[in-house]
Length: 198
Image 1 (spheres, rainbow, N blue to C red):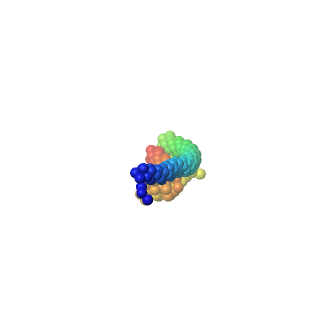
Image 2: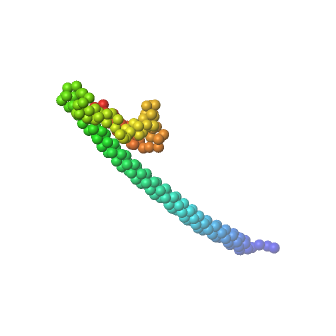
Image 3: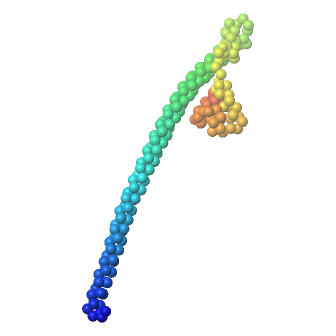
């Protein structure tokens, strides 16, 4: 078959059409694949973001619960400490009143004895004032129902203190607060200084 020049032109044109058609199909398929990929990526990001937000809300609720519980616990602990401090202050006031009463009793008894000795010279057996002074002295030396002092009431605390334990160790061993231990020690020192002064 003898090909004319225009046959070559038609054949080349047909090849160009087929080749361009194939290229356009490949290009469309690639664009569709690219169009799907960004959509899938956005959807994945949205899901990940939603999951992250849910996790954050859950952890926030958990932390809020912990904070509320700790605040409630601190409030209850503060109330217990305030009640304990009020009770100790009441005990201290009662002890102070007892000590003042005992000091007044001792002072009046010693004044009576001194006054009796001054008026009668040397106390005689028949002297009624001397007998009264002796009875008052005996009453002072052996009171009918003297309540024990602070050291006797809190003997374990002072034993630990004499063993060289710190305030924190004493409070921990006896299940008391540091403030209570320090207050009891201070009251004991005041009591001892009153006895020494009298």
